[in-house]
Image (cartoon, rainbow, N blue to C red; front, side, top):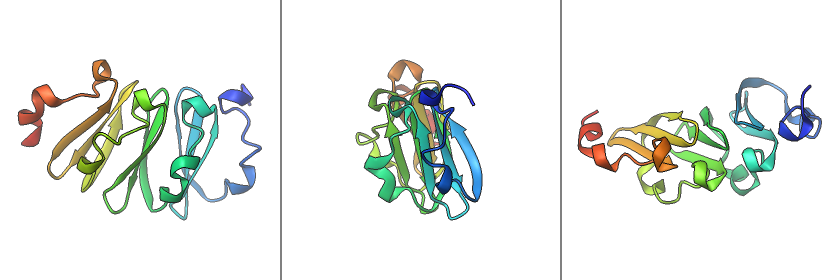
Length: 142
């Protein structure tokens, strides 16, 4: 139901939506974690529905965080895979080397933060929390 372009029509992935454990939403897309710990996405490609670039990495997924236009998936090995609008954190390449040994990922409207064993890592739009450099000393002791 709803606007098909914004995720309301899942017919293109319906056959893949078996054993759904969780569903997460951006402003116009959905991501489902399946029982086999893989991920299926649908909806508006500009809101994170297009996960083809990282699909081969979307296995052993234990958690997904979503914001307006991007998704971040936490894998069981403590790594994080991101996709969607690069400005909103869909591109985590600038902090990817810090996204290891992660225990939790959370989202604001346009950014992500990850709790890792070495501190907190943030990415996405700075005004939405995507830059924690000013408080890095405080979050390193977190």
